[in-house]
Length: 359
Image 1 (cartoon, rainbow, N blue to C red):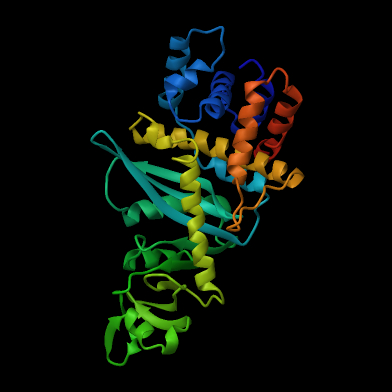
Image 2 (image 1 turned 180 degrees about the vertical axis):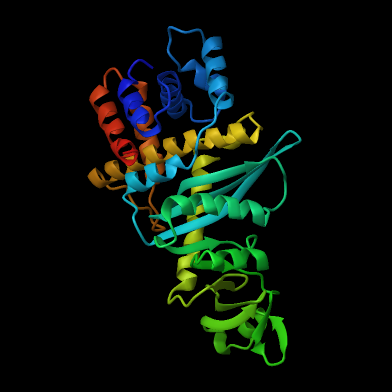
């Protein structure tokens, strides 16, 4: 990796780390594109050939263990890169796996963007099981400090992220939300004088027509209930919101975009679950690197698709995602970077908004 100075200069403007650390990050990013799975031994092979692999491996390990930084800096970088200013759809979700007997539990917030989630903040825990309300608050507060509430169109979350305390927090922060709830959730305002499960309201509907913005009392909060069932679905989609949305169900369905993101970070992309790291603080740094690699690949995919549209298959889906298109393009460039230096410089130039975000 001899041609990293341009990428180093750009990252230095954004992160303002020391040059040695920026150099290491630059080489990790480029090596990651070449090997793809998150394996530090394999990544070290693609480091500067003038250094022994053992030394490069130790250097990479020090990068993930030897310093701390404010991870929220990436929020401003990504907002600038994608030109995201208002009407943001925030998505909260969790992914987890085990390495041996150790749990790795990641809570992540992304922004819905053209069918995929763009990662902006995360927190890693070594505890298994569902998330705590305290952790959710901490993660969301970190994001709010960077983007503010006024720029949020809606906050989306699945059935795991419910509860009286959590809803109270969201309403107190004045965060507009659309959250899916369970069918057996008890609600007032459906049947006079008592609370019944929300599915009761659906069962009373004629011909199962969609129900929008039915005001109910859940966990001490007046909320708006919307229910719809897609053709072929096993059960109806039930969501609640803090205010009336004309398209609550349609907006909530975009929650799936974070699942697409997880696929890119995991099995269909960088395979982060293959990492041997288990310490939460190290995996949080790894996610920082993966977030940069992901958005870089995606932006290149956007540019390439604008020049040569991706073919559409018979089922109506693209034959290749924008992320995969960009990742393959970057890998091709880096495999022959001496011959494709002009393409490499253009690829680095796509990240110029990273530097602008730091000013």
